[in-house]
Length: 318
Image 1 (cartoon, rainbow, N blue to C red):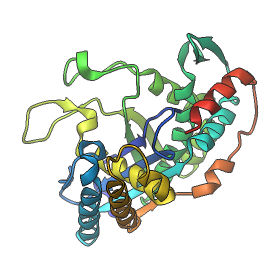
Image 2 (image 1 turned 135 degrees about the vertical axis):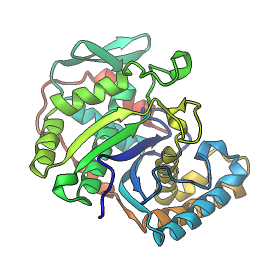
Image 3 (image 1 turned 180 degrees about the horizontal axis):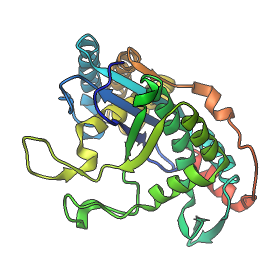
Image 4 (image 1 turned 90 degrees about the horizontal axis):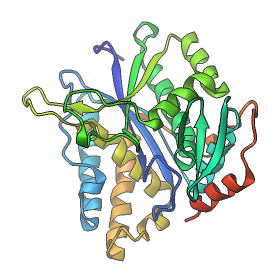
């Protein structure tokens, strides 16, 4: 691939959230997309984010984006990355198993829920479990995009959601926000866990240099107004891919979710999202599917209390 920017930026999102929680959607999906088009540092997408449309319009907007992606494929648009969609229960089991390979870590009950303490920090256990799953998906996306480039150009950055804990609402526009607990936890997993250290070692062996971060603010070249990071148009791509992946893997459950006021709205949304899924698959976007859930940690440094495990698994049930 012809490569022009010094660092290739990817954008990641999870649906419904970067946490294990009861939700009407039939699973948990993560998508990371690296977009690039010559002469277009910012893509002019034809639609807004999935949540911005009423239920009766989601199918129509999905088909609109699918048509745009199909046309852009012949106009020089490059998309690379990874997506993953599984049940909340499978995602929870995977995340729980990888928590036990973290050093200097333990959990404590906290006002009817559980906290995970890592180093001198702490995070809600349900979020930590989902972020382990999220971390694997992000790194598969980094690897996929990295292989599109010549070794001397393998410099990648993933912009993630700001996770719960720190909000831009009370911050100064344009000024960086303090790292959220979710971001701190991902850094801990990246540099302290066995799988994180192994990934870093493998990336180094192929010349892949990566950085994870949050896009707090952005502004268009033609507009001096600072906007919240999540409104960046490139976040729209993984947002819709995550929805499309869930609709592709669990079509009946997706269509029946209570987010649709009428049964026909759900059916139409699945139809549109299925077409969108096929349009995304025209690009270098892939998923390991069921294989990912069978990944296992190389070691267990501590044991999660059964009460905490049962709490998360019960929360993962729809």
